Structure formats: structure tokens, C-alpha cells
Image 1 (cartoon, one colour):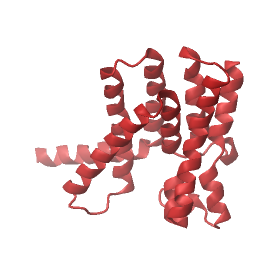
Image 2 (cartoon, helix red, strand yellow):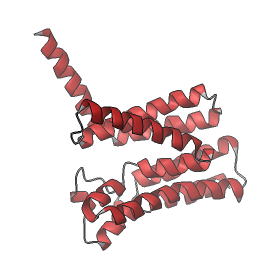
Image 3 (cartoon, rainbow, N blue to C red):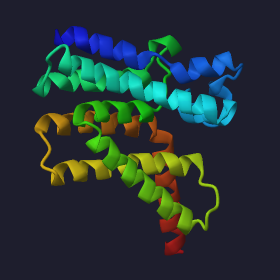
Image 4 (spheres, rainbow, N blue to C red):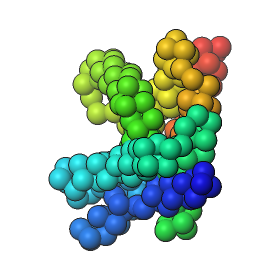
Length: 208
């Protein structure tokens, strides 16, 4: 049954609601911003109403399948690992978009909400909000680039691991965090590469 639930979870995650809502609004999200077919670009392209709808739908497709697997399927423990990761990977590599899915942020929140009754997703939201506020102050409230946003998401996921460790989270949750974080890092590899290049240039400049 775990295999069946995992397949259902992958298909649930692969449903690209934000992209399809964009198409209904006659907007191609692949041509907006960084080309990510997710809720943020839907918000930018079609306005906050559709953007909020996209966020909620992407959240629900991660949350609902986890709750169904636990409450209806009776899945628990290590059996939840593939089921929890499946919607995140489904969104990131959606077959409906020929494997070119989104960055899996909203669905990540949904999965962690379903796994921990919102505790870990709330912790991640607080971490990201504090980081965003800090960046706003440092940049004197100037707009933050999409690269900086992506870097903050990756750092936020790494800090979430510290939170899970301090909370003495179950090993199952730690394995899900590892898989989730590696995927987030992969989907934000361009932003990470830009950060490393910037640090390298700063280091070279300081040596002159």
C-alpha cells in the first residue's frame, strides 16, 4: 500500500495548478521572472488573487495526501518517507510539464503541515520571515532580487534542520528533511552558484 500511496502522492504533487491558472489568465509563467511555473510567478503575472489561489492549491496538494495516508491508509513511521517526498518531487519534476516543474516551496509547507500538524511549517515560516526582515533592513527596504530570495529559502531549509535536531525530531522526519533540502538546493542551484561566484569575487577583491 505504501507504493500505491507514494504514486498517488507523486501525481498529486505533479498537478501544476499555478501554471494552469496562469494559462487560464492567458499568462505563460515560463516567460515570467525566472520562468518558474509556481505560485510566486503566477502572483507576479496575474495578480494577488490568482497568486493566493495558486499558493493554497499547491499547499493543499501536499497537505491533503499526507493526512489521507495517515488517517485513511494508516501509514506511519518510515513508511511515510517516500509518501512525504513524492508530492515535492512530483511538483519539481512534473510529467505534465515534461519534467520541468516548480521550485516546490508551497508544497513543502503543505507536506510538513500534514506531517507535524503545522509545527514544522510554522517554524520554517518564522525562519524565512526573520531572514526576509533582516535582508530588508540591511538593504534599506530596497527590493530583494529573486536570486537572494532563492538563497534565503535554501538557508531557511538548512536552519530548519537545526530546529528539528534541537527538537529531537524522529529519525523519519530527519530523513524527509534531508531529501526535501537536497531537492530545494537542486532547484535553486543557479541562485547558489550566483552566491558562490559573488563570494569568490569578494575574496579575490580583498586580496588585491
